[in-house]
Amino acid sequence: MRELILLRHAHAEPASTGQADLDRPLSPVGLAEAERAGKWLKENNLLPDCVVSSPSRRTRETLEAVLGITGYVEQKLEDRVYEATPGTLAELVDAHRDVDRLMLVGHNPGLEQLVALMADGRTGDYRGMAPGGVAVLQFPKERSIEPGVAELTAFWWP
Image 1 (tube, rainbow, N blue to C red):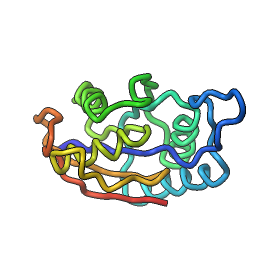
Image 2: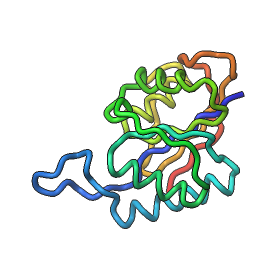
Image 3: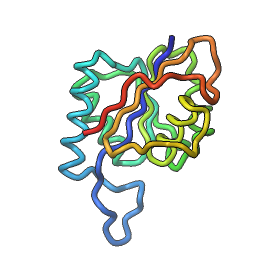
Image 4: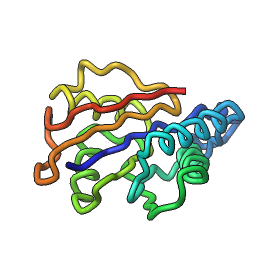
């Protein structure tokens, strides 16, 4: 079995005048959320083998806080994670078939729709995913990423 850990970036500061959305930093609340997510992952022995992350500042800062607690692993910044559809995210996950436990750090609505798509087979029935939230999906190692192939084994939010 393979596992996919989906981590939504924690709370970010609002954009200041002229600031690009990609450059928004975590808020102090967001930093605390990210640290709690890292502690939860470590306590539940859900340590990733590799991480693929959106290049936005808030996702990178969320990831840095989490890995500061869980331990550092191979990390890849992937532009396609930012504003990604569930289909794009599924392609990225499928491209990392060799990774037993992959963590994807990104944004809504793509992450919460990916959970619904993989677990329930549709994207219209998603439940929401709070900033700093974590969803863990398990699926057969030999299977491609497709609708309904995964089981949601854990869901956590700060």
